[in-house]
Image 1 (cartoon, rainbow, N blue to C red):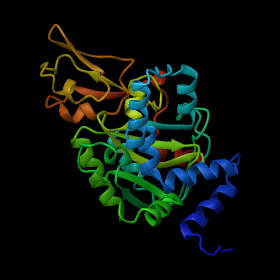
Image 2: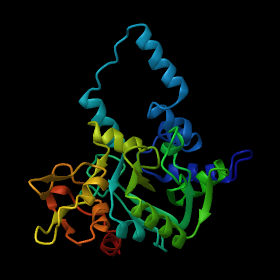
Image 3: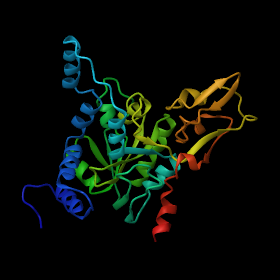
Length: 304
């Protein structure tokens, strides 16, 4: 039943919410606020909003010391809102799906307690959105229209509520954006959020200087999961040029005594370093301790 004065995409969101197990009215309200006012939401969350800056400045003038962030709070937030690093080929597969899929509760692939399903309806409906993290920065990385919202009801909701900051794109155009961001050294992440129907909703192309999630992750809030791969260097082929060191967003590559090494704990297996190596000395290898890769085609075959 259509509800007067409520946008069609919102009604579709409500319908999906009612069909989503363990998704409460408060969850829907959170998801609606997040999608409807995403730029305000992100700018406040990352501390970039002018009011947040004024509030922080006022506390400093009053001599109020900021509370230390508890490990429990950081982990709790990451359980409900997180991304999984994915190599370029995986990101390309996600935007080329041409059939509806329902892969619930990917516990081993998405190592969090909540928001770990991939349910894609009308997956060929893709919207490029101006990145909320980049738009919150004074001097952001360019371009800014690099967040890919994939499938409905999310793509329709974002397009209808942010017509001036989003555009419809084809899967081929999405691949072009992914390739260009990959060349810029930006990391692809598949993002999941509890308020967004407990599932995957977007691919973000992230840089450490702008991305709120990467900043949070690199400062102790584990919002990002490894791809399930780790970089491996062929010492015989490596010429120690350090090109890969400069491009790694996670500080996972180091030079010591003219020899390159991978900082295992820091490597997220994103694969950005591979294309930066002219000697083809870097490869990605699967590592069970890093988790299970998000291989969407293989996962689809398992549920058929």
